Length: 355
Image (cartoon, rainbow, N blue to C red; front, side, top):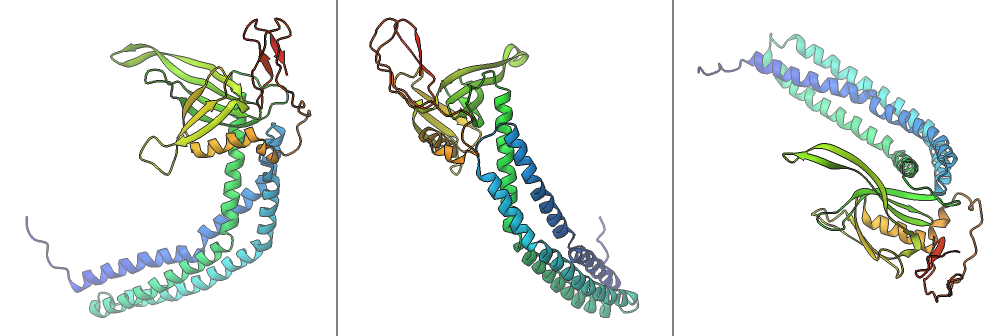
């Protein structure tokens, strides 16, 4: 294979010109401030939609995250206070940078005219021009960063609020698709994809629900019914409740991680009070188990009620002491009453005693 002939001064000058022209195109793009203007438009649209989205969430029956309305109002006020100045700064910076780009583009055209007549001279001037274009690009980036910083916190909080609204919508959707019904006056709090780690051969996947009254795990998955060469040829959708206990029965919760991602805890261990049909369960969550442990504890303690948008539609039944005797068979009872419990069942005769 023959060696490539050495590049001529004209070749080197053309390469330098192409590089400068490419950077001038990028400078034009930066000077237009289009990305920043789009960000302002997106923020304007997002903030305008927060209030109606929150209202829709309330209409659909989500009673918690009562901070959303106030957060939305504050964000709207903050944006109203800076929006005009942000738009003015974008226009001023864009005009200034575009003029600079025009001047540098004019210099480039002059140099480009004698690339072939005097390539060595052209290369030297193109190198100097490239440095000037680089400085202008740095100025453009600095101006954009300064402007973005003036509303970046508002944009970040708006995005966070939108995520919080969407999480609540997802929660309501999962509850709506569940095979169990809510009690009268029971309000959904949250739901997460989870796997109940019962043992190596039986670890059903589904949804872990928490309301202000119950903790429910519903299996929701497709199970292989027939296999050929280890490939499922027939599947059956399974949806059924495997755990349904009063939320107050969750006596002790702890979280941990199962893999190498130590920053994200995914295992949630729940110990239940004596008298609960199940005494312990471990779940692998799709979300941070530490946040879920804290959430369930807040529900159990009643601290979650501080997030209610309004008091419950029906006042909760006043707390009662645990029944000590079955009204049917007179057996002595010692079942504890916990938050969310609707009734006590006599273990001897099966009588259900409403609370």
